Length: 257
Image (cartoon, rainbow, N blue to C red; front, side):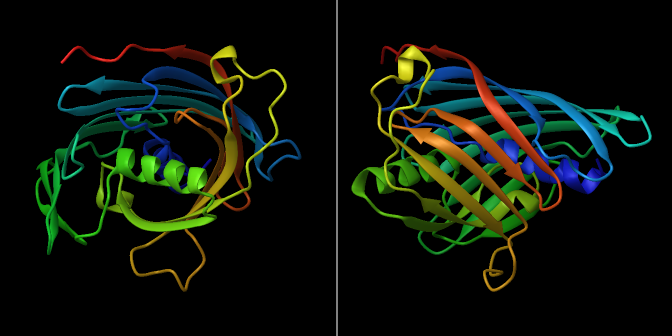
C-alpha cells in the first residue's frame, strides 16, 4: 500500500457519516479486509475502524480511530494508524478538529484548528501547522452533510451534491456527490438495534473543489440506516479496494441539557 493510498484511506475515515443530534448517538466498530478478488501487489489487509458519536448540548462530538496492516506481494507488512476528533456546533457554522496519522510507524502531518462558515466566505484557521484555508460559503461539515444525505434518502431524492470540509488538512476539502438507491429490503443478520429501520445504499464520489468534470479522486460506498448508522463499507481507490463490516454497535443516551 502506497503512502498516497493511505492518505486517501485516512480521508475516507473522516468522511464516514456522523449523525445529527436528533438521531442515534452510538459507538460502532468496523472490521476491514481486502475486497474478494484480490488486488495486484497486495496479498492481504487486516484493519479496524472505531467510531463514536456523542450528542452534546451545544453540538456533536465524533471520534474516529483506524488501524490497518497491509501485506504486499513481497511479504512486507505496513502498519498505519489515524485518529480524528471533531466538535461541531449545533447550528453547523463552526467546527473544531484534531487529527493524527502514522504510516509505517512514521508520523504524517498532524492538523488542528477551527473552521467557520459565513454568508459570503468560510475560513479554516490552523493552529497546527499554522496558516489558513478559504472555503466556499455553502460548504458544510461532516454532521450536516450526513444529515442532509439521510434526509434526501427519506424524501426519495436520488442525488445530492455539496462542498464538504471534513476536518484535517486542505486535501480533506472536497466536492462530494452522493448517489442514493431506492429503499432496500430488510437485511438478514442485521444488528437488533437496526431491525425494522429503513436503509439505502449510498455511493459518494469525491472531487477536488471545482473538479467535477474530472474523474473522482476516490469513492466511498455504504449502507445507510434510518437513524444514521452505516454498514457494508466499500472504500474504492480504483485498483485498490477495501471493504468494511459492522461488527459491534452500542447505542448511547442523549445528554441532559
